[in-house]
Length: 592
Image 1: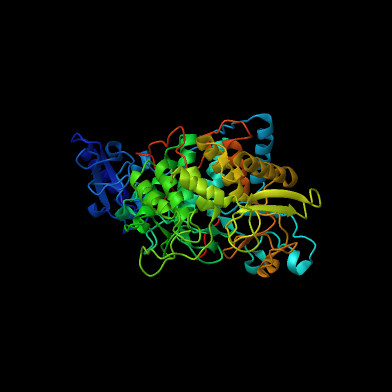
Image 2: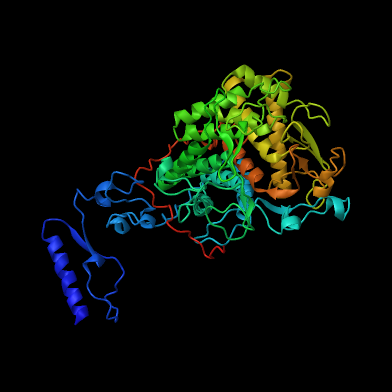
């Protein structure tokens, strides 16, 4: 009898609500189930509320599926359920539903180029991915198979299996930057579904279930979606992780770098442009606003700080600011371009030891935006990515930088960055003895690092198109051809691009003997080395190089330049937050 009376009152109230001209909806707050047999389940008007979807009270039909709007009477953003502020029609109109996977749109190139692109595709497809997320989402492992460390014995030449760091911490790295570059390549190649699997993994790590003090960014920082955002650590492992975790077995490196997160935002923007799925552009805007909220500098150098919450560091990096400049250009944020560009241009000759190069950045101290000079080498990415992004357009500076960078590397002293390596090992002996030409990671390093070499080929090709072939003391066409052919040889022999062709392991590297036959890989000169493993970033950059200009005489396709706005434009994200999950999309739960 009580249940029947409840139903009758419920129906009467609903009828009354609909009889006044509004679309009345009676909503049960869930505290009393009508199917309950409990005698305590009596009708209580506090347990019922009539939500009229009138223009005065608001609805998602009238507001649209927009970010947090303080002036609205109810909300239509992905976080409204957490705050119990959703409009009554939110679930019908705006609730999370993963957008359908787009069809792949493979863009074949001429025969020779296509052959090598297919090798890149196969190498990336074979890379191990994280497996704890739903819908095939997961980051790629940074390093694939090893190619042997040489014949100097187990202690100095045996490479750990299945990845470089496994012997010390029993986990492998899944680096955010490598995956962002891979996602950009896959988007430009037209392999949109593979790109989506990487980006959907980033979504799991970007959007926490709730606010995390001193970690999240939210509506108070003008995050466009109105969601809480946690920027990404540098590297994760294969273990289950969720947004806002920067320590433990699931995290290989919890440092939240400005540059890495800018690359992730660029990956979302490029994918959105290629696929037309505008929600992924909204994520790029969220990341951009979060970085802006925590890292801008207003002194004469301008720019953005290098590392953000929860472990902020005060230094400023030239490479990170090039990344921010490119992101600002892609997202049409003139203020970001101006701030980042001012810092990058200020770094030319900033270190008196290298008057014709861009310094690595500032040292960092207790003040938020210091100007202290950083004792550091010249970094290849700070030189060549500057050319690709078009940050400093003064030709004399670009010419001076190229003149310095293309000087042959020296074992000691302040040589340039051009390395000529002999592959003494080959792939199971095949190709041993081949001489290869590439770029060192920094001017203090040793050995070619192929990720930087591929991006240098792109940068020099662009410079040559704009300003011609001649740089005093160098012929750009010869250097471009030698480096491109070295990368193609690596793809032929290794079916991937290794991080280095130099043998030896970490023990050999610690001896710091660059003249050794197996010196421990390609030494960066800044406290780490690259060993003979298939490398995700180097392979993806090789793919971008081939798409950008497949061979000598081919037209340059600037749409492939990761720092350039996509030719289709980044789609408007104004009312599309459909791809942002309101709770983690995981197959296996994260254990605290």
